[in-house]
Image (cartoon, rainbow, N blue to C red; front, side, top):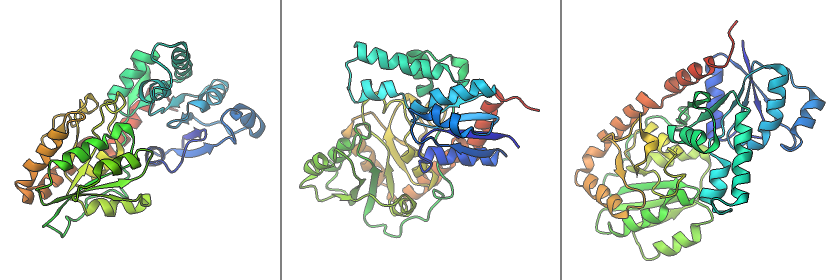
Length: 350
């Protein structure tokens, strides 16, 4: 049995990380963890504790600061180093949050630092081809060192759910952490155009943008907010909805991702409306089962909802077809096959 050592201070409860652990286990790998008390002191901690040599080191998502110590041991043990950054720290700080001006010395320093870290990896995973292309074009990762592993959904939680009993009032649900890339203001604007429809728009979650969104939705009787709920309870709440919403933001990051909520909504067999982007190319891009609208297009979102509600009895069948799309492109079986083929490129077999 081969062993993968998951290295760093990644969140073991984060969906992407849990799915990766499950995939490795299903492929027959033993999964071990090394979690330093500090990423900055990770090398010192590892020299003190001396982890047992694995067959592969995996640095999970968002853990750029752990790549340095992981690469030291990968070279020492002569085992592959695989990095799953999920997002670019440079893109997040400079292109999304505008912490540093594009082209500034601070931005370039951050870009070069990330590029140097990813260069140490034998294989760099991305969740979409758009993200992989960004790593290649902006961070200098060699194309042959990239592989795309979609996020998928935790199928023990997100599986086909019974259609809601309430057929009179359509429940349109968005859930998330209220990030700019979500484009929730577009959802509220669309709801304002649909006040004549027998539909309620529910926004579930929390985040820094909440107060502004509450103000924007003031006076809209068809929009309600619900507080965040435990992750394990989320599928049941989703199952009460007739239509689930993805993201609608026009940020660069929004154009590169397929959000968790899209995979999860497809997995429970609900109709999904979300923004178009090249992130879906090669998988479900253009599929008629999905309600596609342009980024930030509240009129397009409202028009899609209005069109779907002309024949509400067809929503259930649309949901079933959406689940079939999920099984074709994003099922655990599909992801397991992708991971196995990718690892074959760097792992030596006895």
